[in-house]
Length: 402
Image (cartoon, rainbow, N blue to C red; front, side, top):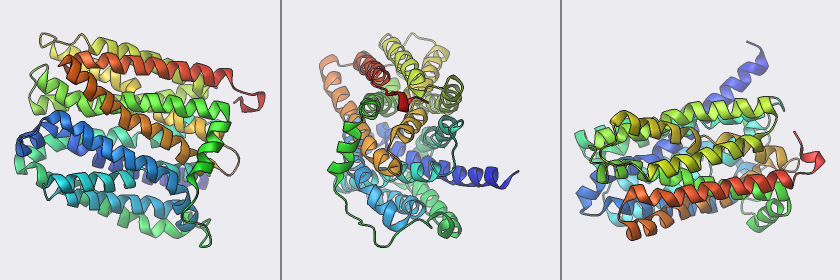
């Protein structure tokens, strides 16, 4: 193995684990929402508000992460995110609604710090011919963490209690943060102690908004973020409440989504590099996501289990498979030297969709009374993502072409 390839493998491996731990932290409570609801005598549908709080603060954190990366380095920023995940779940351990709310704030701050430093690091090791593929491989950490949350979360919660189960996340986050320390000096060599920690976030947002293709890519991320969050947040509850599945059986459905997205992210990234257009591939993904959401509206308890899990798998391929190509397009379209800042600003826009998705979903659920029917909203949002991709392609300048 050549030194260059070994370097790529090491950096990519750690970034995948950081992303997976962030996903594990973010998906843990939704994966055990029915058990939390029983323990606190609350509707499990309210987990959407916990996700809302998390992503509101992830939005703000993503905008500020550029200063953290510049001052302390991207590697250290990733370690700080891990420590924040651990702190948030220690707050969940109390079982208090107030502490769950505050812990969600803390968790969101950590989650917003994951992608900008990762893009900063990856942009130093990718080439134009493997950018989509490498970025997409890194994003497999999200479904990998989700698979663990979907399988281990319900089992541990039922065996030891939902509060005690969060200690799994604490242990994983702290272990990884310590394991990363020996490589910190090498990968944070570009940090500057004179860099401003607090930066004006409006400037980064204006930069993204003034570059038309980048603006439409960010808006596509907003829509697909909403699709992804409703899919991962409400799949377990939908299968339990509308189709009568047990918590363990419903967790398998969520794991099918997460497992599919591992293949989807790698496959879409590979395809984007082969056809030479991440935007074209993103359009196909959005269209298929709209179709899967429409089919979800037709689910009933009479559907065979294999068919339900098959739909979960297909939905996962697209509803959670778009992120790597999305991040790669941001890196490609961003001004030279501004990948981290552009990523943070685009993630701010994306996270707005991530937290608005569950809000719209809850409102529609109140109107329809069924989680399955509510997925018609998800289908409409996916079609909006397709529209944004089309506009991004139309606004490309000759210099923006791959």
